[in-house]
Amino acid sequence: MIQTEAIVLHGFDYRETSRIVRLATREAGVVSVIARGAKRPRSRFGLGLDLFTSGVAHLTINAGRDLHTLTGFDATRSRPELAASLERFAASAALGELCLRFASEDEGGAIHDALAAGLDAIGVAGDSAVGGQALSAAWRLVGELGFAPALDRCAVCHRALAADEVVRFGHRSGGVLCRACAALVPGARTLPAEARLALLSWSRDEEAPALDPPTLRAHLRLLREFVEEHLGDGRALRAWASWEASHR
Ligand SMILES: [Zn+2]
Image (cartoon, rainbow, N blue to C red):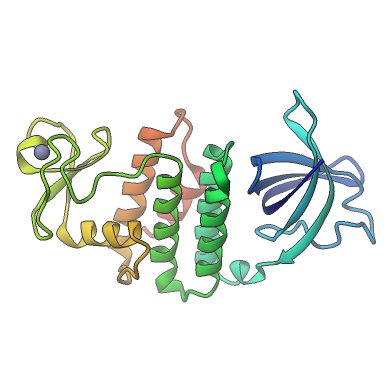
């Protein structure tokens, strides 16, 4: 039996009265749990298992199985504000998807904490600021997963790059490329100086500028392609792609 802070990322009904829920936990990474009786009126889970709610999960780990047992969930923070606009919801689902797909382990709870901070930032952002907040959190998650891209030095030759230097971004190379190295890497994308500045400010957890729709779309695509290259297993990032498509 463990008790751990957790965030509800997904849930569906199971049989008459139960729910199966996926939680991003601080102690055990993302886990699937069964909440028996969760659909009964006056269930001990109450309304605590709503999407994106934070709380303390009481888990019985079933060794050798992928489905564990949730014996209690003390909600500490529900996040109804994330459903208040399509933009917030799409951004939250995209962050959740990164965790669901790639955070089966969470060393020291850093992924859980980055997710919680990202959801809170999205929850107070106006629609035009949601994209920047979500991208900032998403790149932090990518970094916690061990794949922070090179941004201030060329990913191949490690030469320091001037802030206004025109660079390219090579997904497979793992970040930005100087002109000489980019010439040797087919398919590297041009990365405008403002775009690199935005990536740098997100990686430092600084305030980033608001993004107009075409710029936001380009950033969403850059992140999706980078994640698919480094973390992906060939399956599309559906929540991410549908958020991106909503900006066409
Ligand atoms: Zn180089």
